[in-house]
Length: 45
Image 1 (cartoon, rainbow, N blue to C red):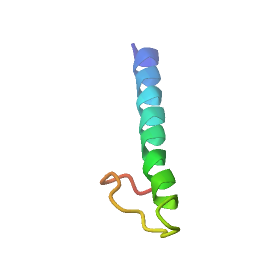
Image 2: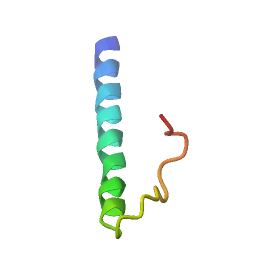
Image 3: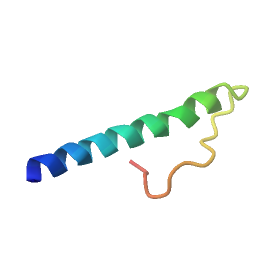
Image 4: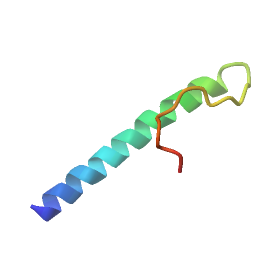
C-alpha cells in the first residue's frame, strides 16, 4: 500500500509540474513581458 501511495504521489507531482509549465510558455510569447501572472497558490518553490 505504501508503494502504491508513493507512486500516486509521484504521478500527481509530475502532473502538477507539467501543468505549471504551460503558463510560462504563454507568458514568454506575450511580447517578452516576464510577468508570472496567476499561478498556483502555495506552489512557490
